[in-house]
Length: 352
Image 1 (cartoon, helix red, strand yellow):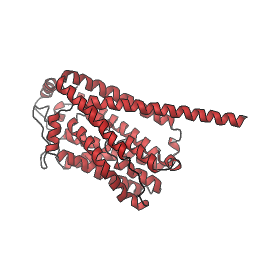
Image 2: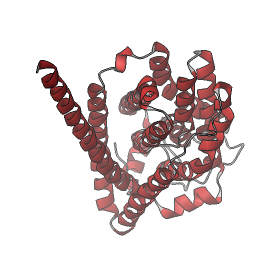
Image 3: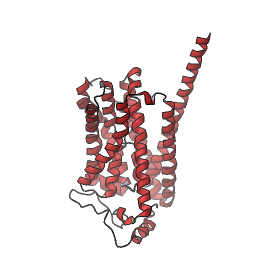
């Protein structure tokens, strides 16, 4: 009798946790749509077209996102001598396209939002081909990857769910620019807080988080930081403006964990999944934490230092075009007065 009661209680608890996780998933999906819509309110069609017409920034971002990240994942798996199942999971994380969180962080870092959203869209589209290619190349060290299933439908839906809200936001920005600025600020603040809350709740629901292999915890923690660093260094070497460097860095370090989770569930058995589920959870948490620390540091710097150090070409009243190779970074050059940046912010309606 006691055993039957215990089994019933355990089943009931598992059912309730499943319902809670589904509710979290729905909440996150809705908030993602609202956040993407609000971010679209900062985008102008002309600037997106300029990025596509002169795609040096896009090519640099794709080199970091779809080239350097999978290679970094492979090297981390080798360096920590992880098990084959864990190694493939690490490569899956590194092969995913960019996620919406990169757009949110880029906004608060005064990065190039047009480039950021364009990169997220393009990397998601190209992920249909680059993800299976990277998995095939790098996972062969630990075994045959031919049976790896790629969720093409999910990737396609992710792309659609990005394009439609952004398009609506662009329309609002075109028709009602003042309303767009309000929606942009409210959406990024509220959406970011809700996404952070959902992430923390998900961690609390996963009881075995800290009982996982230490190497997985370490890799999940340092991987997003390494990704941001790689993106910033490569874009700096390519001599992009600093606001573009920040956008590329965030796009490189912040992966789409929804697509990652789908791939892992399709490929691994429940027993194998229990060994590596900590990896995407840790990665999600630390890409949020890294972004939050960068935002706080940047905003404090802006409040206490001359804002001209971070003035973009747009804030100086110029139309920034896609930075060609060989262009010198000028974003940190100091003007004679900080008042110029304040006037530029008031003129262009940028946030403090």
